Image (tube, rainbow, N blue to C red; front, side, top):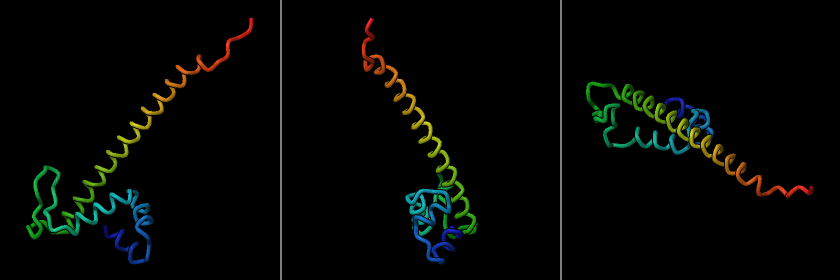
Length: 107
């Protein structure tokens, strides 16, 4: 988020910041909310990370960002797989409809 803060200080829009970070605008907003939220952040095991514990805030922020980056990559792969599957089904549908659309040959 340090990079995002630097870009914001330079007057970049949220769209430009999210593009520079390689994430969607919604992911960027979720990151900002998680970092500013008084709720405890979640660690990778589903447990809460206490703010003010022996773990420095910067380390927990970095862990949170890394976890969100992994989640974002997984979601991107999932969407890509779904789009490929959709294309496959569309091709199958076209192949099934193609014989119906052809005109009978005169013989």
